[in-house]
Image (cartoon, rainbow, N blue to C red; front, side, top):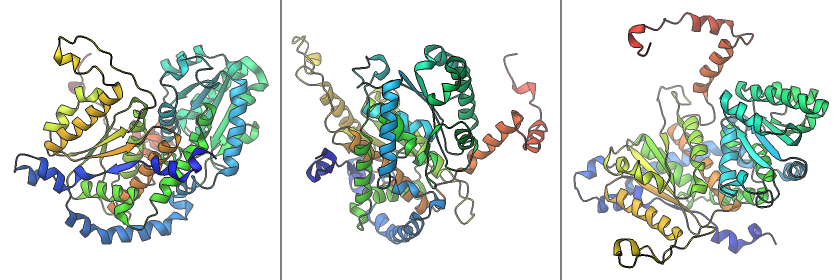
Length: 493
């Protein structure tokens, strides 16, 4: 039996969502200054009770939308509906692992942030630097999520094209950044291996729309489809993220099983035992009623560091909206900020403990690290140093997290903790799906569409116009007609 099919193991590996320090019974009891009570903005039981009718209405609304791919909710089916796709991914990954030394993902936004987060959570911390045997037989992984020419040039000089596979990932099939990278990679491959370049490229895109699927069909490229109704920032559990993970030896079936388990937990009728719905409701409350316009994500594990990057896109792009679904101007959103425990205790926590009451701090903890390092005996004549002896770095890390939680709570600063019993594919699948449900629920309760991104489009269209894409002449003229900058306001020339 695979471990993720064992009911007892699943129970032991269930993440814990602790929102005690969002509640006034904890925050007000800890804060020593009675003046905090007005400014803290903690949540009361009355707040929760008053919100229950809205939660019930939101559940009905999302339930109606859940089965409509056009509403971008098909991501909820990914943990359950990909048996054939997973088999294909595993076959393809085995071929890539056998034939290539390098696997390069070309993508941006959700096409890159999810694969990076999962790889860094579950792979060797120095994956590309260790031997192939130490990385489980997989090729080196590079994820190119920008168009910085210096970075791209440096990468290309490191690669042997004959031993490199490129995975081009774009849902629209028209993403300028990704398609420019593809053209560069294709040119390099053609120069090195001729017509066999097609065997070095895998396309992940929409099944019908966009230039990439057209190219993939014309050039007979191996192709994986991003399902209809799965937006980029919700696509990590689709071939977008599953293929790179499988190529690097991550158990993608266990990853999906963790997400399916969280989906089951988030189907509970009782909101107070439903982690995704309770979290989404609480975050909506902090945004709309408690004046918290910033959320800090602070994992206490280097392995979870880039989960914060993935979450930042999910949260910002989903909830940062000008209009409600009914067209009312709202300017909603909560700014995501990335921090890393313990590192940022020495750079940001001063602000979080003594600064404005405008934040919710989310701490990510790990119950048991996959490996630990003992702190050896030394300098018994220096008590202020010797107290560390006999402990481990894992104990120190968790003590630092608990101490930060205590300090924040004592200062009256809202915080919550999500604890993974350990970091493995099952718990990471849970975590990603938990955050996706949280985001969908918060958006529905705020009244905005969490699945579009109209604010991104102006920049995309303007880029097309500046680079001379046909059909965007009017936008180019609009840009050219903007007021000239005043040299009075420019320093340095």
